[in-house]
Image (cartoon, rainbow, N blue to C red):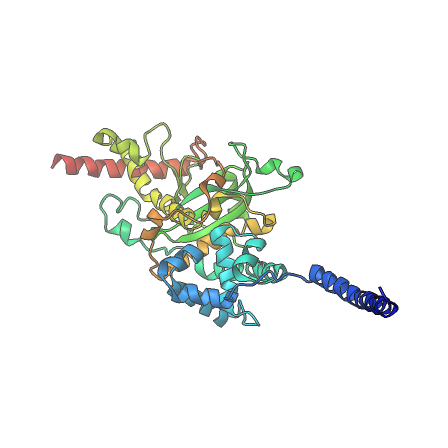
Length: 397
């Protein structure tokens, strides 16, 4: 190779080295930026506000699945919250905030679930859900959980099985267990007869299947009677029975003039009377049968609520103060939906939003309490004897 060719080759190699030294830092910088650049999490084509609007304006089933109610009821509730100042429009509108809460209570959704569905930050959901628990639920319960009327209910007045015997009855009461999550050092009082953790919730219902009172947060080890006594001793939100009136209760409560229980040791449940079509044989059986028919209203109401909001069958990750408010929220929403003539038939075939395998095994109501006081026993006997005498007379006519 001649001298000129060697010089040319050397200069090319030096130029390549200079170019490589120039490109290398750039390649390194590009690689660093590529690794450090954050990938966006919320990339949905629809914002949370748009998703809520799509559910409200789309097929009715989509709204029922997501929020457990019809769109017109959702909109009515949103307008009420705005009008009463319970929830305010900010950069996030009332409708979307309501959607957060209803989606949470309808699906037992975590904040992570809400982020995936609505596309906001964890702090946003924490703030909105806390506001609903702290302000909205207490505010709504004042308006939508009201004592029943003292007037004789049409379902009693218009049925000779119940009138005039139960003319002073204004509703029925039942205790129901709702699962809770609890740290091990606090769990013992909440462990129920089944060995699971729950709160014992007292629910009062009228004969329109509306909930009129809820006492929640009591430990799962507490008896139904203990929860009732506590509710009657509350300073705030005290449960009261008007003079001369009474509620129907099951065998887990003492029989008193204010809380009429069935006779013990006598068939009571409706299925016991259906089997074999055997008629009541005496005044106690007749009383128990008609008592069961009326008290069944609270069981029917609870059945609808738990079907609509299966969050009442699973443990949640909220703090205990808010876990106690979830049954109250479900009762408020139940009453609101009924006041707007919301459909309940679709619930019969609904599979729910929560896997049944997550449902917690819970005890039924208490049984075998004492017979109560003399005043209550005398009142029950008077009703039962009167009822039996009329029953026998009609049979012999």
